Length: 400
Image (tube, rainbow, N blue to C red):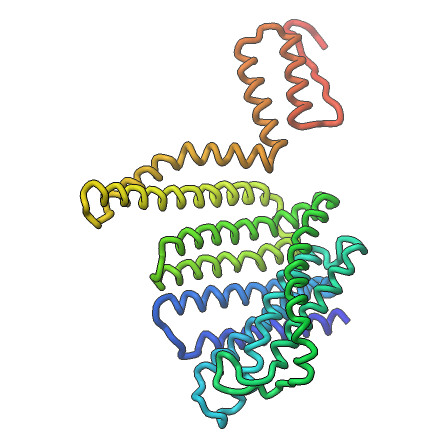
């Protein structure tokens, strides 16, 4: 059984690799950031297939690996068939054109819905948090089937290709179509419920599972940071397609950390420094977002002032002033963000540091040894929280 699962996992991984090779070798549009975007997308898909294959190979009973493999195949198949259908001439005689177009229109929904729902809901051990979550799993599965079926069986011409759906079924689609709206809303609610399940699981988890959940939180924090940077870029991009492509590249690259984090968490490899990594990610993510907003506000404000007083449209002075202001704010703002995050998310560590700082200040002035010993025992108890604390002192000139 395990040998057959390992062979299947290797075969599915190989299928994804072949698809990515075909996609990368396609003579498509090479302008702008098309090549880096394709590479970042390929790394994201390859990460899902590789770590999914490793999980399926090591733990074939855990559905996490199989979900990642199926999602990566859906992404790859969608990309390859879309590329083939788009590059082919408008001629029905082209081999497999209709089939490629049909695959490309519905496989994306599989690739996007599985990681957003079942992958999070079952993470990290492949089981639901409790029996109460079974309705969520059933609603998720039915909603995905309804949405995919409505796309795959829709009659008429495709929106993006000059050909009709060869598998269009008007009668079946007429029955499914009224359910698409409720199914889409249910799928969105299932995704939110899956995220909430992580919080529920974290509250009940032991040390190892907590580290696994923190590993996923690290990847999500990176994606959130990239999304914040993307919003800042697109807010100043306007109609600049180059900046919009840069924004897409940042988000796509950050998404590649999700399969890596999931793979590391399930395979339990080097998780023990994840707290520090998450802390730094949160600090620099929030810092980047704040400084970006300050920079944009500064450019807008200084630009308005320069135009109102001088009538010049050149905003180089505003850009320079905003840059200097942001540079001056980096250190003090970083300290404040670090303190705020420690107070909110790392309260125990924050209280321990404050207790040690208070004890250090008292240590410089305290001369009463008994009182100092009592303070030391109290600080150790507050910061390390041991089961028992005792202090032994050796007095000079006294034998023990």
